[in-house]
Length: 151
Image 1 (cartoon, one colour):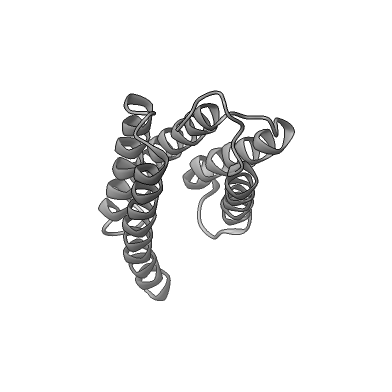
Image 2 (cartoon, rainbow, N blue to C red):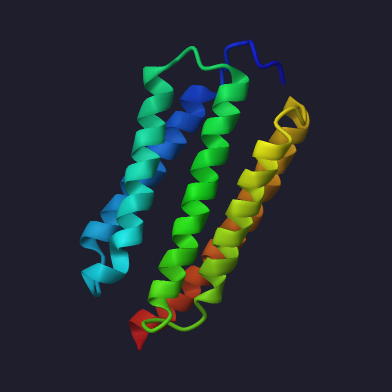
């Protein structure tokens, strides 16, 4: 991954981060329950929106800079998920799904910071594996939240 070449991936990542931020913010605003429990979702949403807009504002981002944007966003989101899970432990059961999801995100982001030159193909595989694991954990968490709603 050359650090001095502009990245063509920024519109895709920017759109993803922006959509993720909008949905997180919508969940925080329109979600049920105590507002104090959802403050971390507001931060996740605002962070995603900011990172998404940032990638569009600076279209000449190099691949290395984009990688650092992604790494920072993933670490911050993971930390906020862990904090949110701790806040939710009195409201829902099995909050450890969200804690595990946040921990995975933090570890992935740290890995990206430590080894930024892992290579484009290796990075694509890591992002794919992270996305699959992240999605599985979020689905598990969603089933737990659904049971909470039904109760």
